[in-house]
Length: 127
Image 1 (cartoon, one colour):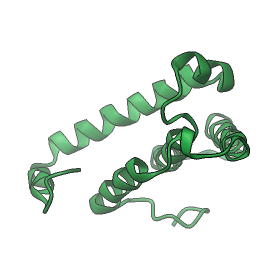
Image 2 (tube, helix red, strand yellow):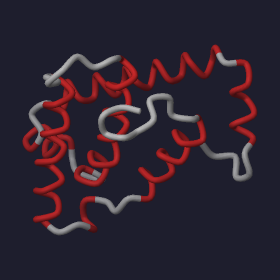
Image 3 (cartoon, helix red, strand yellow):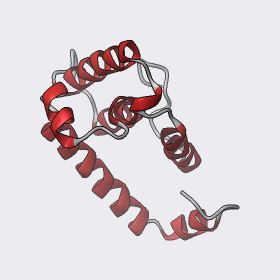
Image 4 (cartoon, helix red, strand yellow):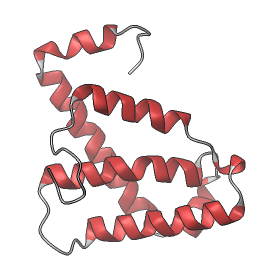
């Protein structure tokens, strides 16, 4: 267990459920301005902790933290235009670079795992 109480090795079903939860979150226009401001402050704090951790973090811990940031980002910037994103979140380029690397890593893991194919055949066929 990490310090925040999340299991280091997310089971694949947990990752799938996380993606489903991210997609089900309210979008920017569904939240009030105060909710967005709080979400943005939380996103900035989390990203600062990721970039400048108080202690050394393993790659797995960094990935977990980034996975936890995705719902926050989606809630704050759901349908926001790119110009708004860069104005409000100056670390957007660094954040998207980290997320892209995480996606590539996850895709490579799944491609190298022979049993991954069965996950795509779940009940509804979604992730």
